Amino acid sequence: MNFANKNVVITGGTTGIGFATAKAFINAGANVWITGRNTANLEKAAAEINSPNLKTVLSDTSKLDEIAILENSFKESGQKLDILFLNAGIASFAPIEQASEADFDRQFDTNVKGPYFTLQKFIPHLKDGASVVFTSSIVATASNIGTSIYSSTKGALNRVAQIAANELAERKIRVNIVSPGPIQTPGLEGVLPAEAKGHIASLTALQRLGNADEIANAVLFLSSDAASYISGTELVVDGGYLTYGLK
Ligand SMILES: NC(=O)c1ccc[n+]([C@@H]2O[C@H](COP(=O)([O-])OP(=O)(O)OC[C@H]3O[C@@H](n4cnc5c(N)ncnc54)[C@H](OP(=O)(O)O)[C@@H]3O)[C@@H](O)[C@H]2O)c1
Image (cartoon, rainbow, N blue to C red; front, side, top):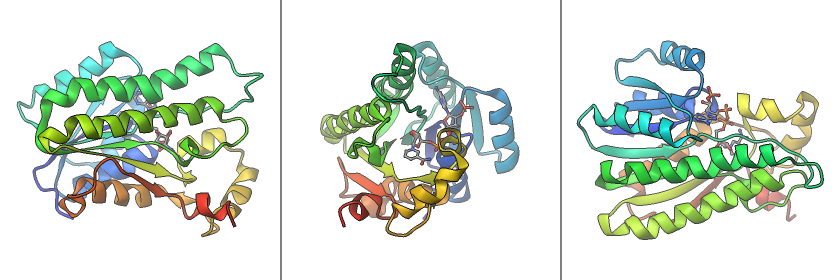
C-alpha cells in the first residue's frame, strides 16, 4: 500500500501495535507522529525506525493538557491530517469485588477520555476524506472474568467510534475500529503470566497468539482507499478467538 506524503498521527506508538503500525506507515511513505509517556521508549522507537519522516511527541493521552502538546506539535507542521490512529491503551484485571477506583480512573482516562478528546482536538485538522481508526479489543464483546473495567472501556470506545463515524460522514471522513485478539506485545506480557500464553493461544481457532504486524496490516487497510466504502465498522483481528468460543 502506498501512503506517500500522507500525514499520520498515532497515539501510543512506541511499542507493540502502535510501533508496528508506525513502522508500516513509514515504510509505505508516510510522515508519522507517534506519542508515548516515556522519553526512553520514544527515543528507542525513533532509533529503531530511523527515518526523518518520524516525529516523536511526549504526551500522556489521559491528560488534556498533554493532548494539547500533541495537537500543537502537529499544528506546527502547517499541514492537514490524513490518518488518526487512536491506539494508546492500558489494561489491568481484577474481579469487580477487588477493583479499585484508581484502576477504574486510570483505564477510563487512558482508554476512553484520551481517544475521545484527541479526536475532538484533531477534528479541525483532519482533511475531508481522512481516516480515523480506534484500537478497541475483542473484550468489548466478550465477558471474561476479571476484565470488567478494561472491557467496559473498549465497549465505550466502540460507541464513541461509531457515533463519530456518523458525525464526520458529512466531511467524508471514515471512522473504523480494529479489535485485536491476543497479540504478542509488551502490553500483553504485562498482564498475562508467561505460563498462561499457551492456554490463551489454545482459545483461538488458529491456535496461536497474533503479532503486532498483523494488526498494523489491518490498520493500513482501513486507512487506505481500498477501504473507501468502509465506515463505522469493527474489524476483528483475533485468529478466530470470538467464533472459536462458540464451537
Ligand atoms: N496486545 C493485545 O493482546 C491487545 C489486544 C486487544 C487490544 N489491545 C489494545 O491495543 C492497544 C495497544 O496495545 P499493545 O498491546 O500494543 O500495548 P503496549 O505494547 O503496551 O503499547 C502501548 C503503547 O501505548 C503507550 N501508552 C500507554 N499509555 C499511554 C498514555 N496514557 N499516553 C500515551 N501513550 C500511552 C505506550 O507507551 P508508554 O508506556 O511509553 O507511554 C506504548 O507505546 C491498546 O489500546 C490495547 O488496549 C491490545
